[in-house]
Amino acid sequence: MPTQVYFFTSIACSLIMWSILARSIWPELRIQATAEALRPLLILHSFRFIGLAFLVPGVVSPALPSSFARAAAYGDLLAAALAFVAFLLLPRGAGIAVAWIFNIWGTVDLLNAFYQAAHAGMLPGQLGAAYFLVALVVPLLLVTHVVIFRILLPHAKPSVVRERRLA
Image (tube, rainbow, N blue to C red; front, top):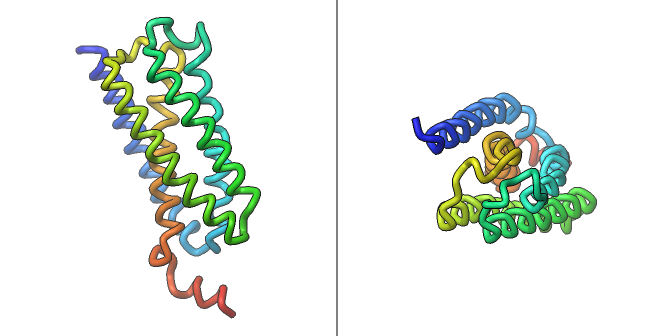
């Protein structure tokens, strides 16, 4: 089987497993106040600085396209900073606003990384040790971006929670 099949199978399996995990924690997150539900997810995304590994010789192959490496590394670094700022500003309205900005940026950044990889003709072996970031961590981040959108959208909360906050 070609290496790409193994790579995309790993990503697909990770997406499935992280989605199952997200479904198991969603009932608890959906009843929490927005800021409280966002906190653990924003902390998780604050670790996206790990994307700088794409710029470290020896972690990735010298053949890794630099256009992909730079876009992925700096996009992740900005996403990590935005997630951390949103976390610090919660529960104020500014924190929710920055959480929106982070979540839109972070989602687009991950999708752009897939596009950049395909456009550059990247091969999975060029990722070196960073293979596990793409096969394991990126699917987690994508799934949690969906969860964050569900938390941020007003209709995603049961009316009981809205009423409790108003009281």
